Length: 428
Image (cartoon, rainbow, N blue to C red):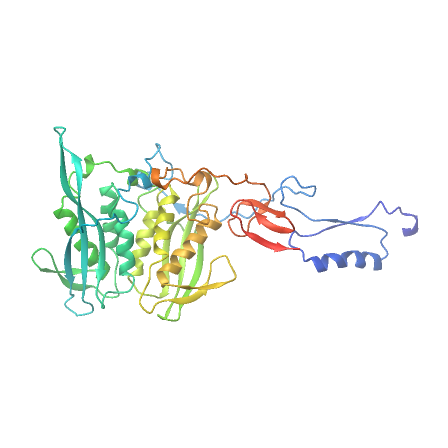
């Protein structure tokens, strides 16, 4: 009966969105060889407002078996508007002190001789208001760094990241960071003398010993006195104070391989993620596995706590400062995250920071400059950090961008272009 059937009655072939173009052309030849008078093809299109469209299909539910008890220190809901996190920084970068500054130095010499290096803790003077209304000066620590050829790899990055916490106006936040570092373990615990009298005590590792020495100097300067009466803008801006633990079904995660032939580092970085009620995916914990300097476990702890802040501007600033962290004989070639080219990275730590920045960018939380996108930055930037008013064109709805994830990937002048991040794709 085929000769008596009108060609308007055709066969519809559903084509997947990612169906190769060459195979798509052969559909019409195959239909012609089969004797069909007409054929209709249907291909879903994610471009908003397009003729061909399809309702979003219900994707498989992502595993997120997280146990977050209803208690104040593990909350996913913010009860009140937090204070600006970046605005709580006394100095976003190291202050310029032409006349120099006072610093205390402490030697770290474990009894087993596994290392020997020096810790420096710098301080400066700041004015404060007394109870009677007058003002006075007090010493506050604002940086720490390590020096010595035998220092463990990665400890310098910890000192750099911790210095930014020392420059915040939240003393409870600094104490929380030191508590996290004090729980960092080496392969074996060690004994070492501690200030002020050289008392020999056990410590889980060199990172923990470093944290205890910094804590000692902060306590000498009265940093942790009357914490309950001090403002805590950073702590108040945390989604949760203790990391949520997953159940047997697991949760979301993202992993990446890191290999540095210059230092024989070969490990996997894992980032645990959760989905907030608004659908946003947020990284909240970093873990390392493989061959790497164990001091990086301390850096992972610090960055994990930074991720607990509701404002991703803070973790973005932390990671940007680690991008230029160098290491003697530690530079190596590696692929730029999200691109096909390679470049020289100054250290393994710098590459870890680049990977994490790219992950936040893919999730639509940070832009290419490491700053919060749209509503992701719920907290304000300091006045001197606020960018000027943008003169760029508004976002144009389109496909999902392979670089930043925003649905603003359109064709412009024959090439695919993202109106959100500026990524340019294939042309023709």
